[in-house]
Amino acid sequence: MAHMGSSIALLLLMIFVSTSTSTAATFTCNSTAKCRSLVGYPSPNTTSISTIQNLFNIKNLRTLLAANDLPASTGKNYTIQENQVLKIPIPCVCSNNTGVSDKMPVYTIKKDDGLYHIATDVFGRLVTSSEIQVANNIPNADLIIEGQNLTIPLPCSCDSVNNQKVVHYAHVVAEGSTLEAIAQQFGTNTDTLVQLNGNGTLKAGTAIDVPLQACNSSVKTDSLDSPLLVANGTSVYTANNCVKCKCDAANNYTLQCEPANLQGFNCSSMLCDGSESLLLGNTTISGCNQMTCAYAGYASNQTIFTTLNTLSTCPAPNSNNASKLGLNSNFVISIILSLLYLYLSR
Image 1 (tube, rainbow, N blue to C red):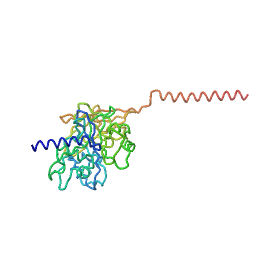
Image 2 (cartoon, rainbow, N blue to C red):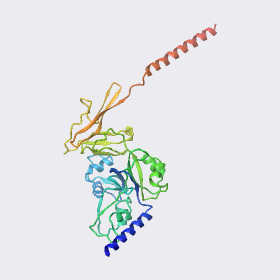
Image 3 (tube, rainbow, N blue to C red):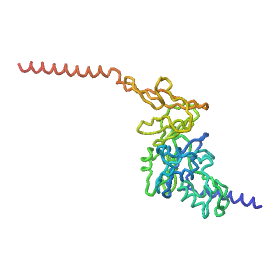
Image 4 (cartoon, helix red, strand yellow):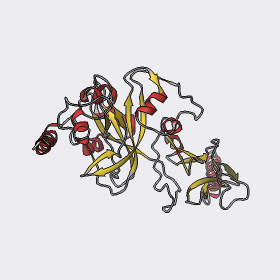
């Protein structure tokens, strides 16, 4: 009977949550594949980057550094200021048309913790207390135990937006913010934000789904990291930490990859396919053609694939002839005008 009572209580809780969490960060997600997503974590206090790494169960510090485009040499004691926002990479999976972080992070309850405190103060309102309660099958939110582990269901999505693959980013709305300001900050538009988040009403302290444009890449479809989606302003390590790829709008949203040069990793040759001397990430000029060795993926045998991309800077065909024609035409006109002037002056 006690078990039946707990089941009924949990069912009532789920019904309550489904009808009363209009402020919950629920992201639509219908994709059948897992993906890498991002959440924007506003640090509740001044702390170290390694503390945040541990909070979100990020295995390697360099993963967090890359997501925030910080140098790999940045130490674990690097200071994060109060209210400073860090991009946190999370694995995302779809379930029941909703995106949620894949069984992470896991938080251990401390003395005097409550679900509201954990959701609001520890995880920066990226999740609600009700979502934590449902995700962990807790019938009574007041009966949680110190030392108990909780899975924190962070919001995310793997869906394409307007037929384009993007990196979904959970952005916690600041006081006084507007859809227009958020759209401008992240390079999207208000219509898309409304499309993803249901309406044009913002509430401070809640997370909304912001699609970040990803850089175009040469990664093959059969590569183990395909599709490699890297959002503007972020970097990732791939190919078993042998390659670092960065996305920057200044490079026309073309993925820039180079050897990661991390100690302790055995990496295969990155000599460019189709070149005798060009290495991954290098660029050379031949005539009026700019050739860049681009990353094309990797295989299970540690092989790293490259491809030679060529950008032509040659002038358009017949452009020189056109300019010469223009010069000759002007010369002929000036001669005709001079002759006409002499004739009229007689």
